[in-house]
Length: 182
Image (cartoon, rainbow, N blue to C red; front, side, top):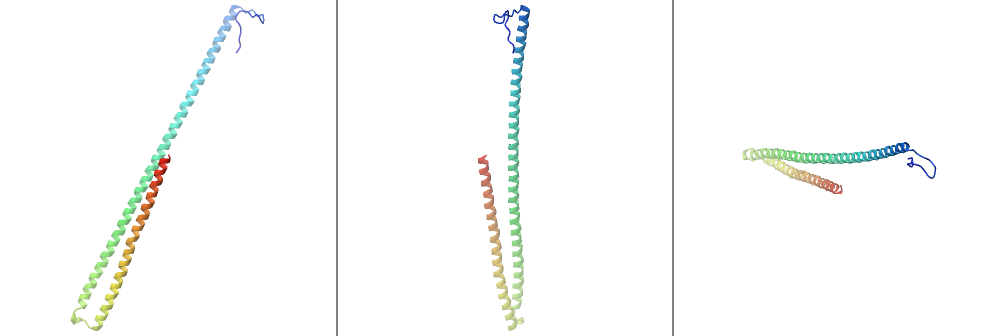
Protein backbone atom coordinates (compact mmCIF):
# COMPACT_ATOMS: atom_id res chain seq x y z
CA UNK A 1 0.00 0.00 0.00
CA UNK A 2 1.30 3.39 -0.91
CA UNK A 3 1.18 6.09 1.69
CA UNK A 4 1.23 9.68 0.63
CA UNK A 5 1.14 12.68 2.80
CA UNK A 6 -1.37 15.42 2.19
CA UNK A 7 0.12 18.80 1.50
CA UNK A 8 3.87 18.90 1.34
CA UNK A 9 6.63 16.91 2.80
CA UNK A 10 9.38 18.48 4.77
CA UNK A 11 11.57 15.44 4.27
CA UNK A 12 11.26 15.06 0.53
CA UNK A 13 10.24 18.59 -0.41
CA UNK A 14 7.29 17.35 -2.42
CA UNK A 15 4.54 19.85 -2.76
CA UNK A 16 1.18 18.21 -3.37
CA UNK A 17 -1.72 20.31 -4.50
CA UNK A 18 -5.18 19.96 -2.97
CA UNK A 19 -6.51 18.18 -6.12
CA UNK A 20 -3.78 15.61 -5.78
CA UNK A 21 -4.61 15.25 -2.09
CA UNK A 22 -8.28 14.45 -2.84
CA UNK A 23 -7.19 11.89 -5.46
CA UNK A 24 -4.93 10.31 -2.90
CA UNK A 25 -7.72 10.38 -0.32
CA UNK A 26 -10.10 8.60 -2.76
CA UNK A 27 -7.41 6.04 -3.55
CA UNK A 28 -7.01 5.30 0.16
CA UNK A 29 -10.76 4.92 0.58
CA UNK A 30 -10.94 2.52 -2.41
CA UNK A 31 -8.10 0.49 -0.93
CA UNK A 32 -9.89 0.34 2.43
CA UNK A 33 -13.05 -0.80 0.65
CA UNK A 34 -11.09 -3.54 -1.21
CA UNK A 35 -9.55 -4.69 2.10
CA UNK A 36 -12.99 -4.77 3.69
CA UNK A 37 -14.40 -6.79 0.78
CA UNK A 38 -11.45 -9.19 0.93
CA UNK A 39 -12.01 -9.74 4.65
CA UNK A 40 -15.74 -10.24 4.08
CA UNK A 41 -15.08 -12.73 1.26
CA UNK A 42 -12.60 -14.65 3.44
CA UNK A 43 -15.15 -14.70 6.30
CA UNK A 44 -17.89 -16.05 3.99
CA UNK A 45 -15.56 -18.70 2.57
CA UNK A 46 -14.62 -19.77 6.11
CA UNK A 47 -18.31 -20.02 7.06
CA UNK A 48 -19.03 -22.05 3.90
CA UNK A 49 -16.18 -24.45 4.69
CA UNK A 50 -17.44 -24.87 8.27
CA UNK A 51 -21.00 -25.53 7.07
CA UNK A 52 -19.74 -28.03 4.48
CA UNK A 53 -17.70 -29.83 7.15
CA UNK A 54 -20.71 -30.01 9.51
CA UNK A 55 -22.87 -31.35 6.66
CA UNK A 56 -20.26 -34.01 5.83
CA UNK A 57 -20.08 -35.06 9.48
CA UNK A 58 -23.89 -35.26 9.73
CA UNK A 59 -24.07 -37.39 6.56
CA UNK A 60 -21.37 -39.71 7.90
CA UNK A 61 -23.20 -40.01 11.23
CA UNK A 62 -26.49 -40.75 9.44
CA UNK A 63 -24.76 -43.34 7.26
CA UNK A 64 -23.22 -45.06 10.32
CA UNK A 65 -26.58 -45.03 12.11
CA UNK A 66 -28.36 -46.44 9.05
CA UNK A 67 -25.76 -49.20 8.67
CA UNK A 68 -26.06 -50.02 12.38
CA UNK A 69 -29.86 -50.23 12.12
CA UNK A 70 -29.61 -52.44 9.01
CA UNK A 71 -27.10 -54.72 10.73
CA UNK A 72 -29.32 -55.03 13.82
CA UNK A 73 -32.34 -55.75 11.61
CA UNK A 74 -30.43 -58.42 9.66
CA UNK A 75 -29.14 -59.99 12.89
CA UNK A 76 -32.66 -60.04 14.34
CA UNK A 77 -34.00 -61.72 11.18
CA UNK A 78 -31.23 -64.32 11.24
CA UNK A 79 -31.89 -65.05 14.91
CA UNK A 80 -35.62 -65.44 14.23
CA UNK A 81 -34.87 -67.74 11.29
CA UNK A 82 -32.59 -69.89 13.43
CA UNK A 83 -35.24 -70.12 16.14
CA UNK A 84 -37.95 -71.02 13.61
CA UNK A 85 -35.70 -73.64 12.02
CA UNK A 86 -34.95 -75.08 15.44
CA UNK A 87 -38.65 -75.32 16.32
CA UNK A 88 -39.46 -76.89 12.94
CA UNK A 89 -36.64 -79.41 13.28
CA UNK A 90 -37.79 -80.38 16.77
CA UNK A 91 -41.38 -80.77 15.58
CA UNK A 92 -40.30 -82.98 12.67
CA UNK A 93 -38.23 -85.14 15.02
CA UNK A 94 -41.12 -85.42 17.46
CA UNK A 95 -43.55 -86.31 14.65
CA UNK A 96 -41.14 -88.92 13.33
CA UNK A 97 -40.72 -90.48 16.79
CA UNK A 98 -44.49 -90.51 17.29
CA UNK A 99 -45.00 -92.16 13.92
CA UNK A 100 -42.38 -94.80 14.70
CA UNK A 101 -43.96 -95.43 18.09
CA UNK A 102 -47.40 -95.87 16.52
CA UNK A 103 -45.96 -98.33 13.98
CA UNK A 104 -44.21 -100.32 16.72
CA UNK A 105 -47.40 -100.42 18.79
CA UNK A 106 -49.37 -101.67 15.76
CA UNK A 107 -46.84 -104.45 15.13
CA UNK A 108 -46.88 -105.45 18.80
CA UNK A 109 -50.68 -105.68 18.76
CA UNK A 110 -50.49 -107.90 15.69
CA UNK A 111 -47.90 -110.08 17.40
CA UNK A 112 -49.99 -110.32 20.55
CA UNK A 113 -53.01 -111.33 18.48
CA UNK A 114 -51.00 -114.02 16.73
CA UNK A 115 -49.63 -115.21 20.10
CA UNK A 116 -53.16 -115.54 21.51
CA UNK A 117 -54.21 -117.56 18.50
CA UNK A 118 -51.16 -119.80 18.88
CA UNK A 119 -51.90 -120.43 22.56
CA UNK A 120 -55.16 -122.09 21.80
CA UNK A 121 -54.76 -125.72 23.00
CA UNK A 122 -56.14 -127.48 19.95
CA UNK A 123 -53.62 -125.79 17.64
CA UNK A 124 -50.56 -126.11 19.80
CA UNK A 125 -47.99 -128.81 20.05
CA UNK A 126 -44.60 -128.92 21.66
CA UNK A 127 -42.75 -127.65 18.58
CA UNK A 128 -45.15 -124.77 18.17
CA UNK A 129 -44.71 -123.87 21.84
CA UNK A 130 -40.94 -123.84 21.48
CA UNK A 131 -41.11 -121.75 18.31
CA UNK A 132 -43.48 -119.31 20.02
CA UNK A 133 -41.20 -119.08 23.05
CA UNK A 134 -38.20 -118.32 20.79
CA UNK A 135 -40.17 -115.69 18.88
CA UNK A 136 -41.25 -114.05 22.14
CA UNK A 137 -37.65 -113.94 23.33
CA UNK A 138 -36.58 -112.44 20.00
CA UNK A 139 -39.37 -109.86 20.17
CA UNK A 140 -38.50 -108.99 23.75
CA UNK A 141 -34.82 -108.57 22.82
CA UNK A 142 -35.82 -106.44 19.79
CA UNK A 143 -38.13 -104.34 21.95
CA UNK A 144 -35.38 -103.66 24.50
CA UNK A 145 -32.91 -102.71 21.75
CA UNK A 146 -35.52 -100.43 20.15
CA UNK A 147 -36.19 -98.71 23.48
CA UNK A 148 -32.46 -98.15 23.94
CA UNK A 149 -32.18 -96.63 20.43
CA UNK A 150 -35.21 -94.39 21.03
CA UNK A 151 -33.78 -93.17 24.32
CA UNK A 152 -30.50 -92.34 22.58
CA UNK A 153 -32.38 -90.53 19.79
CA UNK A 154 -34.40 -88.52 22.29
CA UNK A 155 -31.31 -87.45 24.18
CA UNK A 156 -29.48 -86.33 21.01
CA UNK A 157 -31.87 -83.42 20.11
CA UNK A 158 -31.69 -82.18 23.70
CA UNK A 159 -27.90 -82.02 23.47
CA UNK A 160 -28.15 -80.23 20.13
CA UNK A 161 -30.68 -77.78 21.59
CA UNK A 162 -28.39 -77.03 24.53
CA UNK A 163 -25.47 -76.40 22.15
CA UNK A 164 -27.56 -74.08 19.94
CA UNK A 165 -28.84 -72.18 23.01
CA UNK A 166 -25.26 -71.77 24.26
CA UNK A 167 -24.15 -70.36 20.87
CA UNK A 168 -27.11 -67.93 20.82
CA UNK A 169 -26.29 -66.71 24.34
CA UNK A 170 -22.68 -66.11 23.34
CA UNK A 171 -23.77 -64.15 20.24
CA UNK A 172 -26.12 -61.96 22.30
CA UNK A 173 -23.36 -61.26 24.84
CA UNK A 174 -20.97 -60.31 22.02
CA UNK A 175 -23.58 -57.98 20.47
CA UNK A 176 -24.26 -56.37 23.85
CA UNK A 177 -20.53 -55.86 24.46
CA UNK A 178 -20.12 -54.34 20.96
CA UNK A 179 -22.99 -51.89 21.59
CA UNK A 180 -21.49 -50.86 24.91
CA UNK A 181 -18.12 -50.26 23.29
CA UNK A 182 -19.69 -47.99 20.65
